[in-house]
Length: 128
Ligand SMILES: [Fe+2]
Ligand SMILES: [Fe+2]
Image 1 (tube, rainbow, N blue to C red):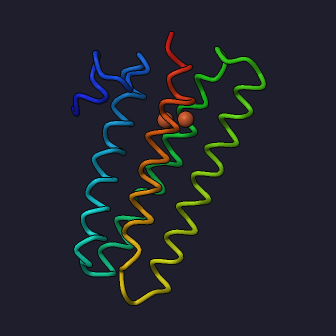
Image 2 (image 1 turned 180 degrees about the vertical axis):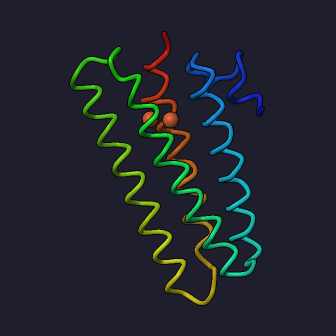
């Protein structure tokens, strides 16, 4: 596990299952950014991207099971943020599919940054 998400890491939520999923998502995001930056095979890249989006949606559903500890307005804001992130990634995946060149890897890096910012601004509130 990356030191970002282990027990003493800055992104630790204190829920081992959620932290393990964050670690996996972070690893997959780095892998995808590399594939996009290198302009690797479009079919393989779009398949990895589709898998990443599924992984993210599954993670969000799982994480929302812990929302009982949040104030209702924070739970709603967090849920909306999840929706926005999935939508942004789906739009990104569509743009990757529609373009022959893969000059858009920097857009993905920005999305990966958004995921880390999300963890800081929202997910850390789930700490027991
Ligand atoms: Fe979240
Ligand atoms: Fe999360």
